Image (cartoon, rainbow, N blue to C red; front, side, top):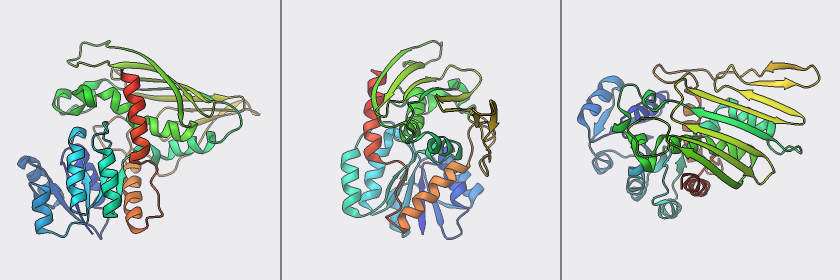
Length: 325
């Protein structure tokens, strides 16, 4: 199988590194930035092209990983579909071209796979298993935040998509975390938010949100999202009459309260703690690997359904639009 990785920034290099673990895959890079191409060729030993058309002309490409800035995704996905390529795309943050690309993927009979990394984390999967389809009503309080300049310390936040109001940092957090919250607690029935700009950062969007969510199951949540928090945080408390779970975002921090013993017990998570230097402690590699494997598995067998897809994401993006408006 021959795969092109389109966009050789930090995420493109992460995907390429994980794809290199598959001995039966031949990888090529695509980026208009020749310095990035040179770096990737030296680091990973892969050939790079300047465009999709050049790659498909010279090689029998089967799949594409779209790792560019979100606002460019729609046109790139469309071009890949026109070339009959299976597609793995990072989160889009906007629904541009969704209907047309969903339709075209069906016509071409190719896989259109949307990343939703937190649905592949063992900790969130454990929480989902413990809370889904319970008879008792549940509440949760969830806070995710990290100071915007610390997201990628090696570059200015104004130089990539989180500085753009259309694809801003708070919006990305919502798009990353709400799929697993919806999977765990059910479809969203009602949502409201209070928000503001609390920092002096050079951004033209709200940098913090307090979101209240009511799910169709009767579960309710408070979701605090911000790019203000100086110490990176990911913390959730889930509670009901017969359950209480807490998680601090790291593989060793998932705990459950034993009601009978009245003690807090750690829930052990195996093979979940691989970490890449430069990212916050709660950013682990394994879920990125697992969703790549899920994509490759779906190509081999169409019966293997993804954890998230474009149809559900289109509905979620409408909810996020409402939260931001």
